[in-house]
Length: 202
Image (cartoon, rainbow, N blue to C red; front, side):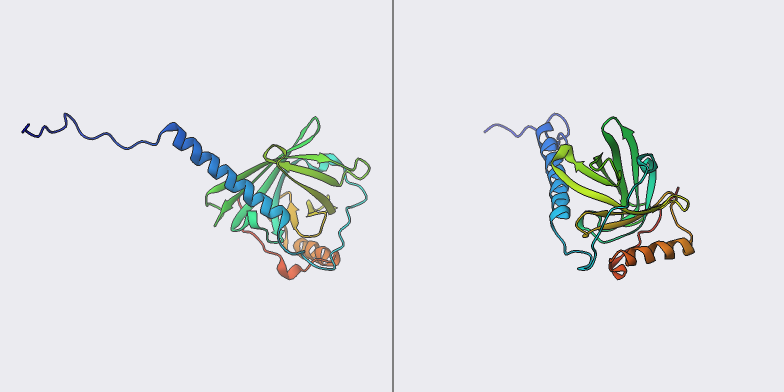
């Protein structure tokens, strides 16, 4: 019988193969895509009486820059999101949009979605077709109202299911916020369903 020979050195640490790491990244990406698909096709309308119509006209240049989320109708993909914001940058065929939020708190883990927004109504400039994940997921968004002098706008999906109150500053003055929420109610949305994410830093 041969005597037992101990290994020459300490055991090698377990390492994931490159293929295993790639598979995990693909699964993570698939999970995000499925969540986005669910966001597009699920959930009941915000209000049976919300007959949304876009504004008559908005200067497309007014969409550029950073917009902060002040309020929103809950949706699956933004569940638990705080300090949400969107960056709109002009490109040749529309806008490159980067949406971010922090999960759980304004300092929590960062989530990011990249989208392309194309104006589908050049008369009003108020209707955008936004595509995510290279066109795999798409949704049409309308500017329902905007007050350039106060730096806020109301953005919603064309079917009235989802809505966002966006501001060019992390927060709106109380009086202005009350005015904006009153306008949301006037548009036919149930303002009792609005959630107000915690703001981030400007």
